[in-house]
Structures are given as structure tokens and as C-alpha cells.
Length: 500
Image (cartoon, rainbow, N blue to C red; front, top):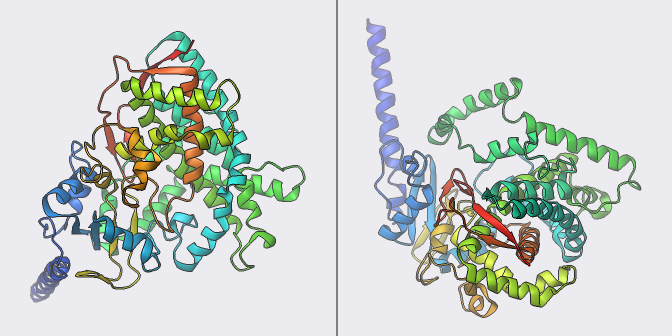
């Protein structure tokens, strides 16, 4: 009986200390002068941005905070301090001027060798090695590969235009973008447009579209529970869980790399995988110590799949939808393409000359940013700017959706106006007013490739078809943000009509 009383007393004291310590922690941001939304005694703010009703997305919750509280807000994401900064001058200081003090993203996967997960000097070295992959010369060579995939897409669209049926173009665009990434980065010959039930396509759809299981929240709220997470991951792999197809892709990549190394004369194709492989050799590395390892080649080739598949299909899906309900914009777009290209084949230089086409895509991604929650930077040291102090380890978050919909930056922000992104108007705006590809040294490394693919697809499609709304078209387009990606939640329904 006495032992039971002692144990209960000890447990009660530990619980009381834990509660007291947690309440002290939940005053950290206020003590630094930050305004915060109301704080829950256990969840902090995590339940508001994660355990949220499906009718209210995390980006909407944060937009309400900004509207009600101000453009600099502190909140508690489990045991992580987060600072939302919608003030563009302060954000410029963080992302560009003092980028060396915010060089890392908050931990994505500490075991991963993908560029998005790397930190400090390792990230700098690998980024320097990979940057030339997206040079103008390399883009021109890879454009040929993209065109081949695009041609298959157009053949499929010919069938849809001939039938006149309503269809979800977003599903076909997902097939196209995976075919492009496959052709340019993983060489699996998936042919998703011809085979939309492809196992790898279905795996990647599940991988990116399924929200995190609720139990994962424990690892955010209670850091000690991460030990249990390791056990869960190991068991999932042993039982052949969701990652088995992802492992299959990486095993395939290792086999392709082995063949290319054994017979380099046979494999002269200038795809992204070969460019990564070239960057793993002594003559192409920054130094013998910083050349890409085989694991880094494999994981970064797979990163191209994860980063390039969903983002570009989303951007194109949003653009096709907006054109279907704004025929006047589509007419202007066709006129520019017709004037620049005429009857000849589209070239790389033609793409660069399509200024209005560029504006249409950028405006689509302003209205519907495909990745609104990934411009995150971790403070490497305590940082002060005026009256603002960001403690070491805190994470700065750029609220992309809110910035893109700020009426002070974009008057009538819910209207689709591509003219906002013509050169003269862009030059008059703050450089941090547009964050679809992030900003600063840690911006999206594949932005140029994504725009090449999007402009090529849009130009060749509008040149050949009229994109029309149909009985299943919903405007504004319903979207869902599951993790860092925002997707069309009910597809993008249209019809295609062949131009005469």
C-alpha cells in the first residue's frame, strides 16, 4: 500500500512538472513579443493546423490568423516554434539578405540524401553540383525528351476531342508529367498516358495524396515517441507496406546506373539521370569529397519524381481550368502562340518569346499555388531585425497562399488577370510578392524545367484545341491541401474542341 502511494505521488509530481514546463514553454513566443492565436494547454496550435475540419484547410486557418492578428505571428507546432512572416520586407531579409543564417529547411527526413533534406555545407555542395543540370544548354537537350511525351499527350487529346466527351484532364496531366519525369529522370518506360493503371503511377498518387496518419501527430507533439516511429517504419517495410513500390523504383535506378557505368558508350542519352550520374564522377565534382555518391544519385533522381510530378500536373490542371472559364484569356493566348510560332515547329527560343503564355501560368499559380506550405527556413542562430527576435531553432514560414491573395499586393486577388505578370507590372512589384517556386538560395532548383514543361504543354495544346467548360466544371475550383501540396479535390472537368 505504501509503495502504491509512493508511485502515485511520484507520478503526480512528474505530471505536475510536465504540465508546468509545458505552460512555461507555451509562453515563449509571447515573452519574445509575438502575438499568437489562443494557445491550447496540450496541443499549442497543432490541432488548428492539422486536426482541422475538412471544410477548413490549414492555409485558410493561417490566412484568418494573418487577417485578424497581423503579418507577423508566432505559433506552436508541437514542440517547434514557428513564425509566420507575411511582411515582405522582413521576409526578404530572412530568405535573401540573411539567407546564410536560415540555410536549412526544418527537418524533412534526416536520413534522406535528397537535396530538400540536406543541411548546412552538405546541402551547399550538392546544390552546387546539381545546379548545372538545369542550365540553358541542358534544358534545350531535355526539351526533345519532353516533346516526345507531349506528342503522346496530344494524340490522346485528339481522341477526347473527337468523342466530345467531358473528361477529367487532371488525371491525364498526371500521366503526362510522370511520363516526362520518367523519360528525363528514372528511365522506367512507364508510358502512363497509354497505361493509366500503371502500378508506379498508382503508388505515387497514394504516396502524395494520402494525408499523414493521425498517430504521426504523436511524434510532433511528444518528441520521445519518435523511438516508436522507428519501429513502425521497420515493420511497414518488413510487411511490404506503402513504400514497397518506391523501393522498386530505387532498385530499378540502381540497375540502370550499373548498366550505364559498365557501358557508357551505349548510354549517351542526356536525361537528368545521366546528368546526375556525370556529377558523381571526379571530373564533374566540386572536390573528391563532395562528388555525388550512388545513393545521392538514386535518391535525387527519385526526388525529381516526387517534386516534378504532382506540382507540374497541378499547375497545368489549374491553368486548363481557368482557361476553360475565361475564353477571352484563351483567345489572347492562342493569338500570341500563333503570332510567335505560326505554322512551324515550336522551338526553345519560341518558348522564351511566349511572354503572355508565361504570364498565364504564373497567374494560375498565384491563384492556386501548388505548394503553399513548403517555404520554411530554420534559424541557425538567434536573429534580430529591428524589434523582431527569432530564437535559434525556430522555423520561419512564408504564407504563400496569403501573400498571393493579399489585396494590397494584388488588387481584386480572386480575379484571374494574367496581365499582372507581364514584364512591366512584375518589375513594379516587391520581389517577394510571388513565391510559387520559393525564393533565395534555397528556391526550387527545377523551376526552369517545370516552366519549360508547362509552357510547352500549354502552347501545343492551345495551338491545337479550344479548352471548354462542361456540365461538371466547378468554378472556383475546389482544392484540398493534405500536406504541403494543394490539389484539385474533384478533378478538372473540361471538353476539348479541335481548332479548324
